Length: 116
Length: 107
Picture 1 (cartoon, each protein chain N blue to C red):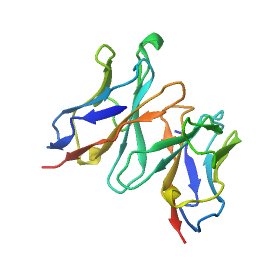
Picture 2 (cartoon, one colour; picture 1 turned 180 degrees about the vertical axis):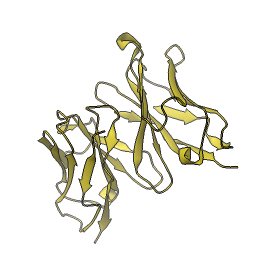
Picture 3 (cartoon, rainbow over the protein chains, first blue to last red; picture 1 turned 90 degrees about the horizontal axis):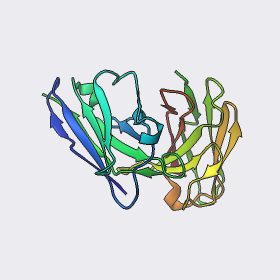
Picture 4 (cartoon, rainbow over the protein chains, first blue to last red; picture 1 turned 30 degrees about the vertical axis):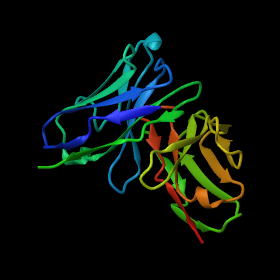
């Protein structure tokens, strides 16, 4: 399973780091972050490829240059480092992992609220 | 960016009904299309990947079809636990994009 943590209330302009910890399976897969603003649909945030594929990243335009995805496979943790937060970033953030099939496992989500 | 048009945005159906939801991409997405179910306050659950492949552990009452840019999700016999919001996602080209969602409600 995947468990997100690190969410909370943060002021505009500040930074926050989310973690996604895997248990019971290897994280040697492509992993993604998604988010869902209150009452809205799902939005893809970004992806990090497995180390064997270079560990490279892709991002949505709305977060490019402000958010960074990284991974520590030795600890089975995926990170989302968010900077320059705005009220538009208020959402539940979900991590997802590929397995033998794409996006097969999802975490329960962590709420990030950006407000002064 | 690839636009995903999903319809209907909502539907009312009865227990036992066959339900079909459609997703149309603005260009060919090479069948890199996934379907998700989301219940209130819960994380999305992956149902279908590669347009028509069922995720492990998902009921066979769910099926996906289509190719190119037109795709459908079918629920063969609607049950109480199937009332939820369903989303399609194209993962052919970055940025990945979702459809707007279809809310399936009880008639």
